[in-house]
Length: 418
Image (cartoon, rainbow, N blue to C red; front, side, top):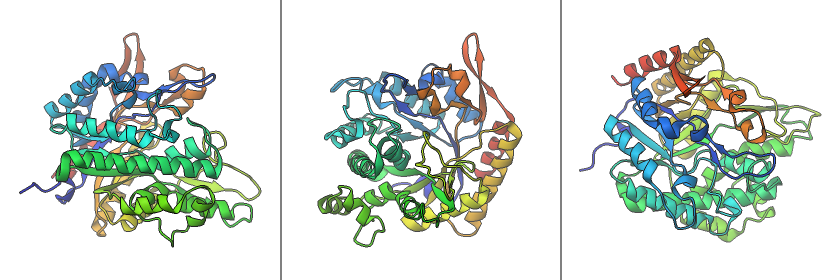
């Protein structure tokens, strides 16, 4: 008889994450982003795993750098990931593996819009699952797929630089098809041993959403926040609010039928919530397209927004939920306040019967803002003070310095383990 999955044991599981955004493509005025290189995780991975253990994290959300393991078509180099995943096992630390965290290898021309992208990503997923079948069973096929689609499809901010609603539909469809084939590939290797943690970003919209100039856009955004997850789980049917938009912008009925026939489901639905960023505001008389290039203002809705999002995802997808990323970028005292408040909110939801199974502080150590890509300033100018450990520039590279948030997190995690 198989053992009870970790997310069914009745406990609240505490973990952390290591930022693993990879956008390796470059062009004039745009640098590659590889967070493992920026934070020196490639060299310091062993110490970084020890940091996770030191705060009593049970799991670590961590990604395979696809562009590193597959530097050229048909060539695979697993040497670095072999060492790291062996390191997880040696420490008894559970990896929840991000297979896609924003970027593709540079040889995938057109990135998500390459006609063979779904096949490419499925082959990569199959090879990863086969190679690490004894080391990793928890997979996130795509981290934050709707942010992928917005940045690459509507905002023209990341490759392949599509723009507008038609671009959004094109990229959303491609990412969703790759998502389905990725999950099928991993399941084909691991069978019932596989756990699929789907993860998406909270996207809440408030303010002057009924202003005539915003009404249609705000309505669309409120529904499209769930679009990729709705596609992959077969929920885009004849009654879906976005169906007219999808059809008007290139999605064929045959494509919708394919998603319905090949639907995959989350074992755990991960929700990323950042109180200062997850609620965007529309302003009457002000046109914002959204995204980094023309951001809408945001509002901090605190634990109210957090509990709303966890309840919404639990009800919509009928799966256990976890807080897959949260933090505030601020001083230690402000981070401590949010840690305590967000843990209390999650525990309150559990008391109310919401099946919340995990809490993730993101990240384990500080990271560098994505604005690094469009800047010529040194990485230090883009440091985000978010972590349980500070990144500190030294003559020998980036040191990790434990801060009081790590101690408080460990106290919560220790209590949750009992």
